[in-house]
Length: 347
Ligand SMILES: [Zn+2]
Ligand SMILES: [Zn+2]
Image (cartoon, rainbow, N blue to C red):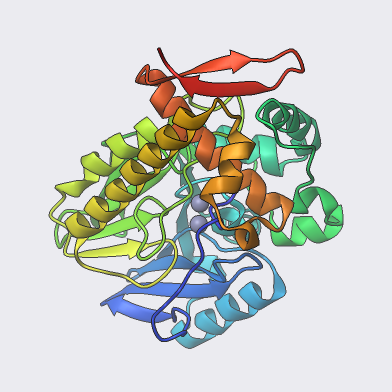
């Protein structure tokens, strides 16, 4: 359930993003992750008496080393960490949050929808929940699959992803203004990539912490993963894109890749990508009714579907588009005798 696929990173010169101070007292800390996106960004806000982290990377050895190197470089001790903001529940954004919270006592903030997911997925009930997810995907033509974290040794997994207990997390709501180190940040709820995805906007100078909502070069994964999630994630996402498009952002700080400045242009490109994908799906369904996995085979290059994780994310993405079209009454579901659900053009 992370946004690492099917989109691949492709920087023009082949270099990976780097750790650096973006503006005074605001650092982008770039750490390696074991997913195709290769790196994730944490952001640190630095005040006179403490500091704040937005997202916490993962606890894989390379990421730990990169984070510790930055702490050494900046001279910031974990004990003076005051707050942790988690932008959404995906593993590459929350991995070290439990450990850092335990060491510092920092207040942890998150949107309540993703806090539920955080606890369900990372506090040990995932195998049970995953059975349900697996059944959900089988209806859409995907044979049973495995998740990397179900295959990983549980003890090793706890070193990589360790989250704070429910009681330690304070909820963030859309529109709330959060004061961090004397500066105001507006919380913007942007469901789509995750149901509880949030962004932060600093009104004073237009710093926009976009997390995985708006990324440079790649489109964030927008997928439907189970019948417990919000039912129309692509509609959520396109609405959330419109919600941020008019922000007077001076710079966009994404969850992956390098910061960029033209928010409107990027929102326009991503919206166009989804419109094109919707049309491709309508064209394929005009030939014959099909299930989501069949469509996925035609819409994605085979080399991007080589592991279970990648294929499930691609099918989830196709499903998000199919359900968007179904809510628009352009397509309908045709259940079959074997339990598979075909989609067809609505009459
Ligand atoms: Zn994500
Ligand atoms: Zn991410």
